[in-house]
Amino acid sequence: MSTFLKRLISGSVFAVVMIGSIILGRISFLLLFLVLTLSTLMEFYRFGYKARIRPQYLYALFLGGLIFITNYLFAIGRLGPYIFLGLIPLISSVFIIELFRNHNRPMHNIAFTLLGLIYVAFPFSMLNYFALSYSEFRIGYQTHVLIGYLLLMWANDTGAYAVGMSIGRNRLFPKISPKKSWEGLIGGFFFTALVAWIISLFFTNVPLIHWMAIGMITAVMSVLGDLVESMFKRSIELKDSGKFLPGHGGLLDRFDGLLLSAPVVFVYLEMMMLI
Image (tube, rainbow, N blue to C red; front, side):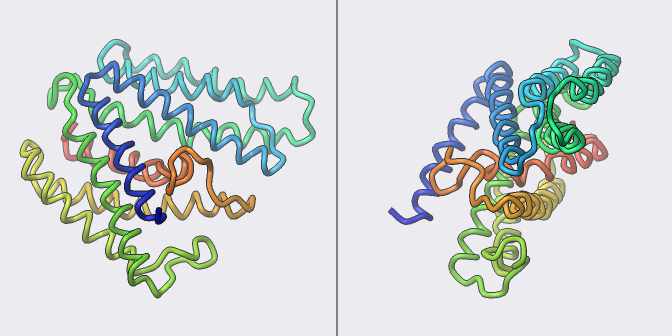
């Protein structure tokens, strides 16, 4: 079986599971994305072990889960904004905990622990606001923005991969990711725009212009997210972050675009009062 076919089948099955869980309701959404957050965080911290860094693995997973759940409870109106003040001493405790660990690279350990929370946990937690809102603009659990965003992210990934593998000649960033091409980049943008137009025909409560804007933000930031993850992997001589999805690699490989695009899309949605 070719790599492309493997990638297509595993990616499609995973997409169906994700969208199905989102449609089922907010509890299945919470469970799915909490598991994805923690699993992706685990993959990221394995990078540290490869680089002889020892992040505060278990405590960081606790914090990552807490960050996601806190944002979930805030998004559904169960907690006020004051709850985020409680996260400050817990996150600051990373510095204190390192005092009692017997490792000779404390600065590296602390920095890598906090980087995982910033790079993985916070972006995933932003997805809560794509689907959950009790604001004056949108009430309750609505799936169209989240599903649309995920479809656009996958469209960019699929378009870039298909075009890049077919006609890609001019390297985009050869020092970081030798297989990325300008042709693939443009192909991803065009395919994302096409899918944004199709989405606008079904999710009509968000105008086409906003779907196009979300699509372009997602496409640009997803490419940068892919390059950032490639930079991390190249620095520790790692090909894939894991083996979770045949043809894709690990969860970090699958969601590298989300980690940079979700926060920017969130800002756009807030500014345009779409959530």
